[in-house]
Image (cartoon, rainbow over all chains, first blue to last red; front, side):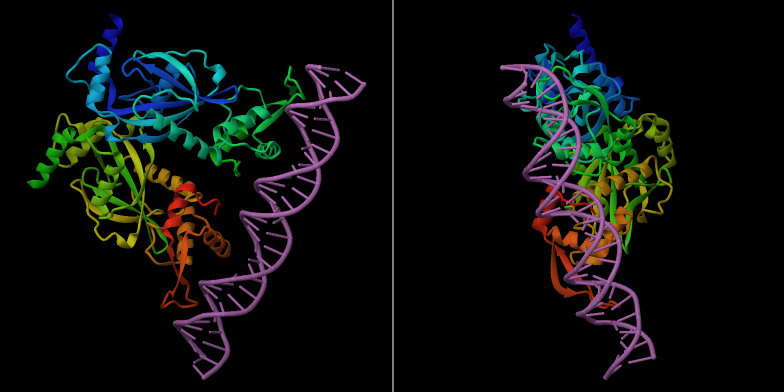
Length: 257
Length: 257
DNA sequence: TATCATTATGTTATAATGACACAATGATAA
DNA sequence: TTATCATTGTGTCATTATAACATAATGATA
């Protein structure tokens, strides 16, 4: 059976191509219908939902590994991706657990690099939900789906904790760096942008003050075009002023929201 | 020769007790005579100055490993220590480099876990310079000294970059979290605290506005005692209000400096 | 053509901030 | 003994930023 061979090979030869004891897990946030989503895989080995993750090639920069993993799962490239924390509880992945996972796949081995303890580096990614067409799953998983951040399923290992930390980190970052370029379509309205901020920060913002501050940051360009087919007054479309957006990513916005 | 045996044993048996491919480097900041210092070791293997670092035991939490390494070098315990970044350039530690280091120690081996590429996790530590009596060096180094942040010597591998990143991270953190508890003696004056902030932020602050903000944060308790033996008006001593300090560490100060 | 939810823009009171003034202190030196 | 003076402790004020709120414009729907 092909899948069995691939899994078996991975368990027996992975140490030849990957760094030992260290993995990557990506918390991939998407924004859709005013809700914040996270991309999860359903694993074959634990029958639970897990963050898309992987390992670092022996000659690979960790950031490149994260890019590669993200590309494999979402088909997305050039993503605003950043490491945010290393998770290293000794009990987060023990030999017993990892051996049981392999058994669940219908295989048994005495030894494997995969049985060892792994320290995992959490990466944050913000992606445009609408651009993610390809929802692949890897050889260890059967499904790849978006979940609402407020109604996550039972999670593999400490992945719930990783998501919590990722969200906290993003909320902190939001006060310094703009977000949206990777989460929204190219053209978007002010209410859409505001809703994004409200969803991530999990609090209501004053519509007028929000607009004043965001406009003041000069990271937006207003288009003449207005949104069509809306019930009431049509809002203008905006685009990000990429040049100013980039500098704001570096130096911050200079205000809180 | 005892040292040779210890080193040889470390190179040959380390993989039995440590995680592979992952190390820790500590940027230990101290504050003394109005200058920000960093603690460095002079290595026997590269003849350069290096950050105190080490490895993670197979069953050890990474934070505990960092604590252990810091304790070994400074004799300090219960330190405000935090991971701030993972450094993972593939070329930061290659087999050729690592093999040369061993050769510099007067030993040669074909294979060793120490020859492999290491990804390193940077930890920040802020310590009270005056409390650091014990400046030990480990088996790979001959000296352990404080260096002024502005006049660092030639550094091992990418350790200069690690220090730069550590400092940037600390400057960002400073706007949200108080510092000082681990950097200053128990009793300190307002000018001393201000000088600490000025040194870390690398800019002058208005004396009166600084005092107003810090007092407003309610993290200080003023003592009746004033500093003795000073040329002009004697400043009051302050202590940190540890209860409020702790909460400020969590929720932030609420203002910039 | 009136309605109405929504957008776009403006106003105001309050709080935070930066720049600056001046009196109090106390060791030092005349 | 007393004047000096750099430094500390506290206060003021103009400016800016912020939150809360008001009103006009829009355009699809009824």
